[in-house]
Image 1 (tube, helix red, strand yellow):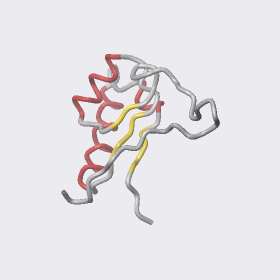
Image 2: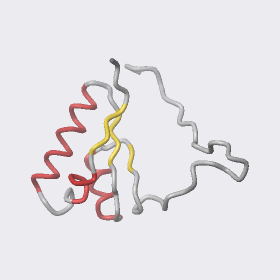
Image 3: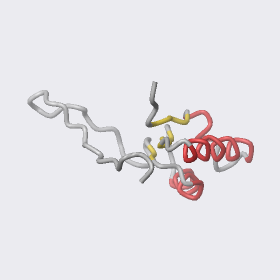
Length: 92
C-alpha cells in the first residue's frame, strides 16, 4: 500500500513548542516522511506559536484553530466543497 500523507497527532503537536521531547519526535517523523517522499500533516494546531515551530521544522501542512476555523464540508446544495490541492509527481 502506497502512502502519500502521514498525520502527526494533536497530542504531540500541542506540546511541540514547549517540550523538547515532542519537538524532537515531530521533527523525526517529519524527516522520515521527507526521506520517503511522504507529506506530513500536523493536527490540532491551536496557536501561532505552534504554527511557527512547525514551519521551522518543515512540516508540510497544518490543521486546527490556529490555522483557520472549521468550515462546512458541503455547500448549500449539499455538494462537497473541499479544495483540490495539486501535487507534483513523486521524486520531482
